[in-house]
Image (cartoon, rainbow, N blue to C red; front, side, top):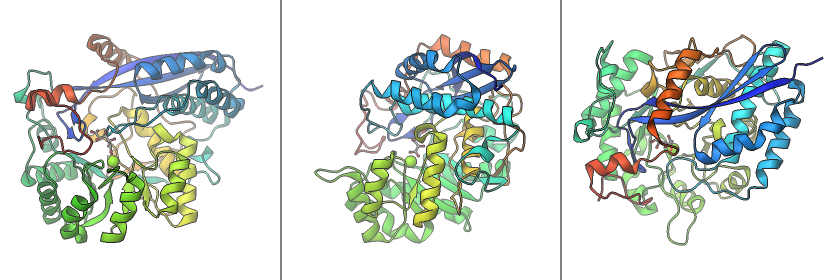
Length: 441
Ligand SMILES: O=C([O-])[C@@H](O)[C@@H](O)[C@H](O)[C@@H](O)C(=O)[O-]
Ligand SMILES: [Mg+2]
């Protein structure tokens, strides 16, 4: 007899964040996530982590009766029932912010992760071994150093974290203003010293394109061997994207969402045109975010690297994208948002199950490192994460830390990420414009 799910707990949590800038504005001093905890009749606990919003919390409640009482080995049936129930809420849009605003796919992923964690513990296999057609493909997963331009926290009265007891340079620079090529190179050096990254990504969509190109030049001077990429989240027009990136294309391994929807052209069309004009490979987490969009992106030859973040593709869906990439001569990668250590584990297992050559995964973890909700978070060493061999996800909740993060969430009265709030300290009345870098007003 397989165990049954005896309880489902949904715990919204918050952690602290720096003043990271992007097209959507500036990160608040906190980020919010949602932890799904399932317990089974064998006494095991399975966990999942996803973004949090009112819609996501409601969607999880909508699935409670489907999940509780279900049998662990019937997890696909459980997920399918959840999918059918959620689909009745109607069609959803990703939106034009840098982050994905859909509900159903996130809800399903939160449940899926916790169910896979429990199923893995029941059958004695790590989640990576259960995913996809082939299971585990590698024992180590490469991560890239995800760099951001940083606003000056002293220009706000918000409670941004400070380097009170820095253990190294990374602990200092990640909390200070960084708006120049030198400052970006310093961030990279500090991140390299702690984590050993071989590749770097710079979040763009903040300064003028040419200024961000200069940041890439500085990164190349500091790390001539590193694979580099720049991601303005589709802020530039096609012409602008070509103008900005053509002169530095020899320094980039690919361009992430250099352009997007523009006048009567879709983002998939402008990206296809960008590729034709520059010859640069492209990556996206904005214009191929479900299988239908991926199909059109592929037909148009718009994307080389779909960044299939498991939080909005589901874990099994993200691996399926990896399998398609392997068959079709594309490269799989993963996007990320701010996250805790359960998500780090989820992304590691998913990346481990994607066949063929994959690109180093995104992770915001370096901005959150030091905060945790599990006992022993996965570590990034020499730019890689080890894929555990223990059954399930290989993480154990730290109830005290989880509760702390939940108390922080409760104290905030925030149910949706909002990057405009902090940005308005830098530029009064600032509002989001998907076609204008955040500091270009
Ligand atoms: O955390 C951020 O500000 C990023 O801009 C994030 O929202 C994006 O979704 C992401 O990391 C990306 O690659 O576009
Ligand atoms: Mg991106």
